Amino acid sequence: MNEEQLKKPSEELGYGDVLISIANPETAKQLVTLAHHLTTHQTTFHIVNVTRKGSFLEEERSWRKGSELVMDTTHYAQRLGRVAKPVTATSSSVPEGILNSAEGVEADLILMGWFGRITPVSVRRSSVVNKVLHKAPCDVGVLKSRKNLGNVKKILLPVGPNKLKPKRLAVFDRLLKQSKAKGDMIHVLTPDTSNENAEEMASERLNEAQEMLTGDVATRVIQANSVLRGLLRGSETADLIVIGPGREWVFNRFLFGRTADNLTNRVESSVLMFKGSEHKMVAWSKGLLKALVDLAKRPFR
Image (cartoon, rainbow, N blue to C red; front, side):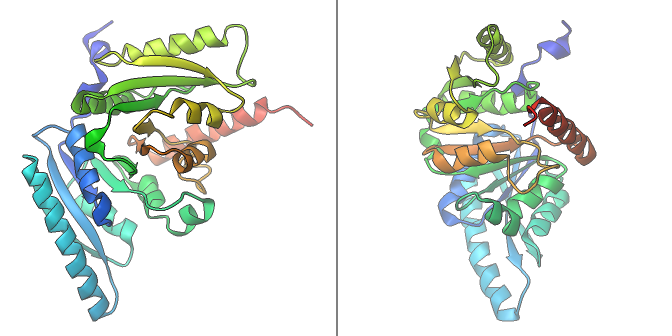
C-alpha cells in the first residue's frame, strides 16, 4: 500500500474558498458553523445572498434585506476567527446567481440550506438546490437544519452497498473531529438483499469504511423490511445525518432519490446532503448504468 492509499480522508478536503449561500436568517449562522467544522483557518468564506432582478423598488428592497443578512453573517464568521467576505449578486435566476458567484470566487465548495418539505413538486418547481447540484463544478453541501450544529452529540453516516465515497467519508470524519461528536455508521439489510453471507459482508464493508477514518466510530448492521425503515430506526438518536446523492442525472425529479428524500422529511435530526464534484457525463453514465442493473434484477411479473 503506497502513501496515497494510506492518506486519511480528512486530508483530502482542503477547501480554500467556500461560497455560503444564505436566504433565511434562522439558518444562516448554521451554515457558517457547518463551514467552520468542514474547513481550516486557511479557508476563506464568501457569504452571498442573491438579489432577484425586478422593478426598481422590489430590487432595492430585496437588496437591502439581503445585504443586512450578508453583513450580519459575515461578522458572525469573523467572530469565529475566520476570513469572511461579503459577495454581491443580482440575477433573474437564483441558481444562476449562486453558480456565477461560485465561479467568481473560484469556490471549491458551495454550502446552502433547504427549506420546507421535500416533494416531487417542490423540487421540480423551486429547484434552486436541484439546479445548483446539477450544474456546480465543485462540491455542494445542502443542510436541512433542525438542530443547533453547535450542540451535535452524535453524527450518523449510512453506508450502502455501492463503492465507498472517500470524500463523503472525509466530510463525516472532519465533522466528528471538529464537533467532538460520537460517530455511528450503519448498513441496512432488507429481505431482498439478505442471504447467508449478507450480514458478514455488511460488517466487512463497515469495517472497511471505518479504516478510512481517523477516529473510532460505532458500526451496526440493521435488518429491516425496507431501507427507509432501517435508516429511520438507525437515526433515532442522531443529531446530524450525512447522506449522499442518488441517480440525480437520470432521475432528477427528486433531490437525492426517494429513500433519502423520505428520510430527510421524517427524521427529527438535521441532514447534510453532500455531493462531491463529478463531471456531468460521468455521473449521468454511472446513474444510467445503475438504473439498468437495478431494472435487470427486478423479477418479471
